[in-house]
Length: 152
Image (tube, rainbow, N blue to C red; front, side):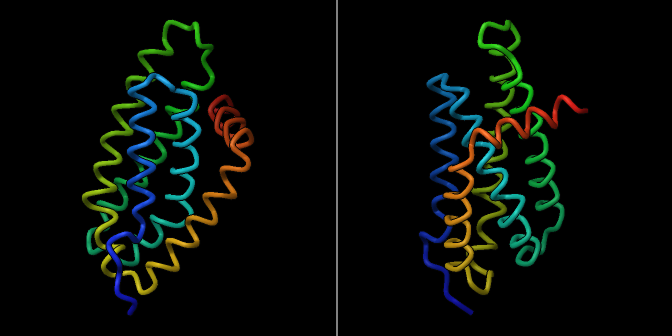
């Protein structure tokens, strides 16, 4: 088993902090785009790895449900015009949900992955590559999540 270095998956924590900062500076659209990238990374790579490494399946299920909730809230916020009176309150709800989700990631989801994943460095590299791919198509991610929200 590869020994995890402390910085393995640190970029996830850094992204969480950047998103919180964007919300604090009321740059909601930018925060939403970063959230779309982060939640896709979680769904595709991080949470499956967490299921392999965690003894607490409920925590991973909670994180998975949190991803779904965040994506739905992002869709609702992005579907509103900047002048819509509901945009600010929905953005505040989204920021609070994101903050709680990030705490769950930092405190409960990431530690077992860092310590027990057989190739945490490889996982981190794969996630960073996928992150770069997703960042190259952020407009498509926005359109996809809004379209999914409108379809329901």
